[in-house]
Amino acid sequence: MIAQDSIVALATPSGAGAIAVIRISGEDAITIGDSVFRSIKNKNLIAQKTHTLHLGHIVDNTKTLDEVLVSIFKGPNSYTGENTIEISCHGSTYIQQQIIQLLLRKGCRMADAGEFTLRAFLNGKLDLSQAEAVADLISSDNEASHQIAMQQMRGGFSNEIAKLREELLNFASLIELELDFAEEDVEFADRTQFHELLNRIEFVLKRLIDSFAVGNVIKNGIPVAIVGEPNVGKSTLLNALLNEERAIVSEIAGTTRDTIEDELVIGGIGFRFIDTAGIRETQDVVESIGIKKTFEKIEQAQVVVFLFDSSEFKVSGLKLKVELEKIKNQFPLKPLVIIGNKADKLEDSEIQNIKSEIPEILLISAKEKLGVEDLKNQLLSFVNTGALRNNETIVTNTRHYDSLLKALDEIQKVKYGLETNLSSDLMALEIKEALYHFGMITGQVTNDELLGNIFANFCIGK
Image: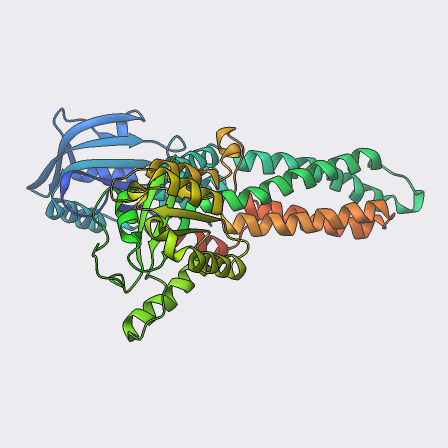
């Protein structure tokens, strides 16, 4: 049920600033706003047109709280589909609280997390996947995640799902009709066309499911573990990548006793770099705990950067190869970038020797920041950005991914049933299940628990 009461919340971040925006939505929003607003031109807010701005003061009886701008959005032509006003006041936290408390006394209640967007969904202004994209857009911190959220908010993903659902629904209706005329033994649904539709739906679902691997990476960032022996320049490399002194750099081996993490955006994709404790045999209890954590972080990382001191290759080359084989054997599915640091100290003959021994090596100097851009390009090559460049639909939401997997399973059951002449009544049940999972994505099928879980993750005021 759609709530009819008027809700209020601060729509801008809490704390002091130049301005703050207080949002009210509900059937009586404009009436409540008018009761506390005094226009400099004696305007009545209720009589004003939608999508207009008005200058005046917020007053509490005879006390003036602030000079403000009030924006009016009359339903259904508003974000929530209801009457909405936004009060732009000065950003003092005292002023914000005074105005909100006044509005609460006038009949508003504080909005729950995401309640404005929930009302937009319930009033048909957004479907559920678009509503979820609002939260993704707010939290996007790089170009790629922003681009995907914008595409989903514009309905790219939901339009694709809705079209498939509508076509499947049409065939479901024809099969249901056949059940009504079971005694006449007639077919209303063209089996050849139905088979073609199922193939097309299966193809689209598989493409969307496969895109989740890229979408999840873009949304959450790619964890990259920087590993190697102590004092080979791991912390220096992290500082060079981030272009700041994030990690302690020392000539003393074993300085990094714990993992250090920070994020960098490369080519619009977020990478989360983890500087780990150096791997070596040690009697130091604290350092050994750090080394244990290193292997845990390698387990969690999607890419491993193995760093060694290239100037020591002559004496430690054999040991290095053993370490590399150990990591390759322990983590065979993880991309491994092998980097020889301190390459500025090498002679040309030494460079050729290292490259002949380890052809895939990337030689850099983290201290001098030589080769760091090559490393960034190599890391970016691990991300399949083709779909992103071609503006294809990319799935980033785990709930959507789960529903797509279940829908695909049901579609494949229907397809098998069609190929084995399964009875129409059994096929109809499986089609209904597929339609249900499609509906779960766009919100055509919902329940209070699902909506509560989704909108609980929103910020107050959105």
